[in-house]
Every structure is written in structure tokens, then in C-alpha cells.
Length: 166
Image 1 (cartoon, rainbow, N blue to C red):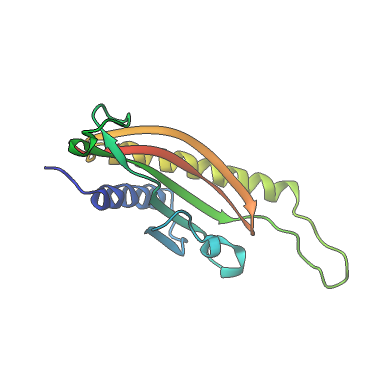
Image 2: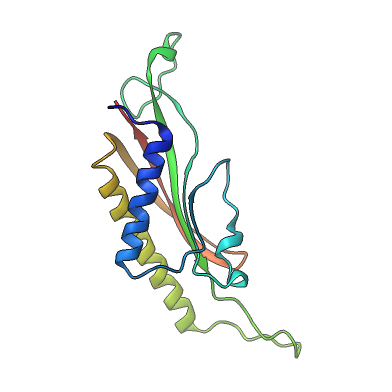
């Protein structure tokens, strides 16, 4: 039975939550299907006191006759849709501290190494989640992982993928 775009996004999100919990991660402040062209990183910064945020988001949609290629012909409205999607996970990043004295304490190598290790573990957990979700979504093409940040006290990355259902 065909699934809607929302159902497929929910499957991806649920699989990612399960993979993160397997790693012992219950610290996320947000894990949701987000609307729009971007995600507010407010939930991922150190200022919030939480462990970060996970999301899946539709990036675009188009008719496809031979998934995942778009169809750009006059009769393309009769074709099924393909859905490019983003799965992302952002965490608090090491940031400079102690501005009171006019000097600042920069994060040390160990803090950066821990953030990089966490980012790589998150990348792998999201990939495992995509593979698990692919069992329930008929058509999945995984794109690439893109690191993001540090920006606004956050660091992480996103996977691009395309999903569809017959």
C-alpha cells in the first residue's frame, strides 16, 4: 500500500530516534518532522541546556517516471512523486567562554575532538536509521552527508536522500 510523504518522513524520524537511543542518547530537546526551507537551530545550542536536535524535512518534490529522475514532459502530472529529503542532527558546539575579564577561554583540543567524535557517531547513526527505514519505504536513494557548523553554538550535519513509494 502506498505511503504518503508524511508517513515516510515519520518512518525516517522514528528510525533515527531508535538508533540514537541504542547509543544511549536521550538528551535531544527536539526531534520532529520540520516544515519549510530551513530548521531553527535554537534547540541545539548550549544556551538551551539540552543535547541537540534531530529532524527530517522535505526539501522539494517532483514527478518521476524512473525514480529518482524527474520527468519534465507535458504529461508528467500522471507520474508518481519523488521526495528529496534532509535528515539532520545538530548538537551544542564548543564555544569560547569567560568574557568577563576581557579575555576569553577558547575550547581545547579535547573539546573539539569530543565534538568531532559525537558528530561522526551521529552521522553513522543517521545512516543506520536510513537503512532501517528503507525496509518500510519502497524507494530510497541515499545522497551525501554534509557537515554543518560550527554556527550559532551548534555543530552537526545532514544526510540528503530521495524517497518515494510505488
